[in-house]
Image (cartoon, rainbow, N blue to C red):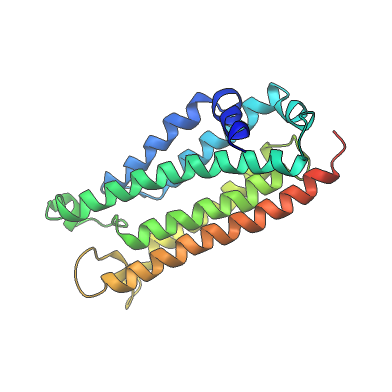
Length: 217
């Protein structure tokens, strides 16, 4: 499996996928929908799928002396590595923003979602949806990327809009707090987001592996 992951990292990945992980730093931007920082790494992964398709990587990988299920697992490992790298950058940005920069007027009076554990949990969920909709959708055919990515776009931006709106609803203002008594509740939501990421990714992988085994390339 390590060799498959190295193949993905060195041969199949588009360089832009690595660059777009840095968009996790969007968690520092005040007055901006910071969850777009989860969209750009997904866009980089999409470009990697496109890049690999044009290089006929799917056919090459399927001809290797290994189960087609393992080929899918290698690709999912690559996807998760990119996503978790972006999430790590978001987490570091969140901690710095909550501690060292929390008193800056640009953050304390921010109308948009603040970088807090709830926002990080929401980012986990968005990546899980990407794995379910786009990565799983790709393995229905083994070559179509545009349609599943469009389906993800149709889902992700309304989700970002919902998350940005929630803290404006009376009684839910605590979702946007980064200090005080509600930190425990936000950490629970972060764990729920992380759990949803794991669950959606596993469901997507199992379905993708079954579909890819049936595809006649």
